[in-house]
Amino acid sequence: MTDSDENIQNVSGDEKVTDISGGMVACLDKFSRTFEASARRWELVVYPSLLAFIVLAAYGFFLIYTLTNDVGRLARSIETMVVSMDDVAKDLRSVSGNVAQISSTMLLVANDVNTESETMKDMLVKMGDMNKSMGVMTVPIYDMRNDMSRMNHSMHQVAGPMKMMGGIFPF
View 1 (cartoon, rainbow, N blue to C red):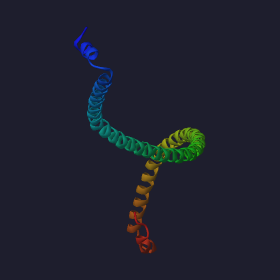
View 2: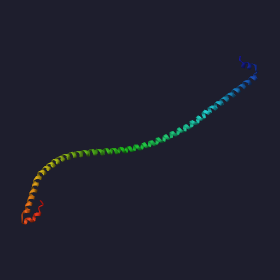
View 3: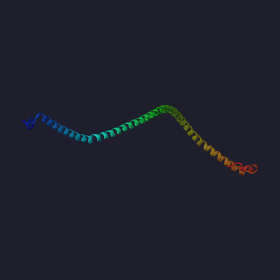
View 4: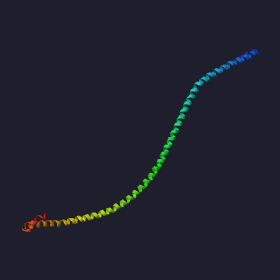
């Protein structure tokens, strides 16, 4: 047997109840003080943590709200770009048609230039022939000029009515 068992056996029934209830009260008192101290320590951790969580939750809500607004504006901008791209696509189709017309026109111009090139070659040959003919004609014209000069000179020497006409011939 232990000391506490001996004390209980030595004590009468009423004293046992008071002794046990006094021990229980002291035990409960000690338990409540320990619980309160532990609760105070937890309050020092939990309340600031709860406040930090509330601040972070509010900031997170603000970020999500701002993000949804930004995504909405982005969606509207993309919609505007899509509409603009439709207009650009229509304009590009028109440009493509115009380029096709320009291409066919350029083919016609190229054919015309080719034809004109042949004509120019013919004209060049004809101009060469004309140049030769002019060279051939130059000699007789030079001879005619000399003959006219001699004739004018001999008319100046002749007396009579022909002398008055001496200034007519410039040769």
